[in-house]
Image (tube, rainbow, N blue to C red; front, side, top):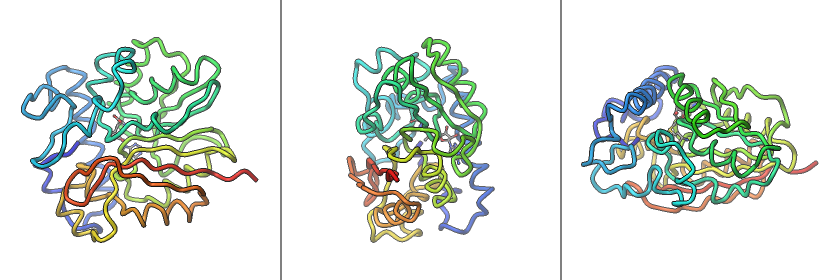
Length: 273
Ligand SMILES: C[S@@+](CC[C@H](N)C(=O)[O-])C[C@H]1O[C@@H](n2cnc3c(N)ncnc32)[C@H](O)[C@@H]1O
């Protein structure tokens, strides 16, 4: 995910048309999915870049990304391709506190790792949706779900800025290193709030920047597909969540990435009313 060659995407925020950025994000993750699917390797077979399916520039702690963030127990229950396609910057399941029977939505579900792990936690009476805009990732995730024998999962094609689910439909929204990729974060948070039932909660991992970093500072540290240029600051993240109607917002940095950018766990709740 962190790609040192991603210089074309490392432009100051606002200098690219949003749909162009989205197309580049989609093309990037389609290529990752194809590489995993074909097992020709892609970044996954490049031993110089670690085993976490990310290209990692000098100075970034590569253990912060990919399947290494999951317990051995969790990993033992996953298809190899689901592990190989793991591109997250954290483990949202550590904070999501999923319960038997919950309905869960994973924004930007990729190869399906968090969907499959959530499916085990919510049990046969629960349901887990994975939402992704990239067809190649959806194909990979559906294949992984079949291999894992997960009957309580459904992968939806769509954008997190326009979630294809009804109002008040899910108990928990999770996501792993995806919100930073959006060119319209207010829409993501508004849509997340809409689909959560009152009392529902958000538990996500994402890249977050220190408050003093300007959009240009962030873009100088990494491109958009690299999950850096599009990162919100801690203050922006909190403000957006509160503006969307969330309460009990906490943003906890878990690991520094590149100079002032962090993996973080973001938690919030939709009030009961
Ligand atoms: C960094 S990968 C993370 C995948 C997965 N969450 C994981 O931990 O392995 C980002 C994923 O988000 C998807 N994505 C990016 N922007 C999106 C958007 N606006 N709406 C839906 N999916 C999106 C990409 O297609 C890709 O599969």
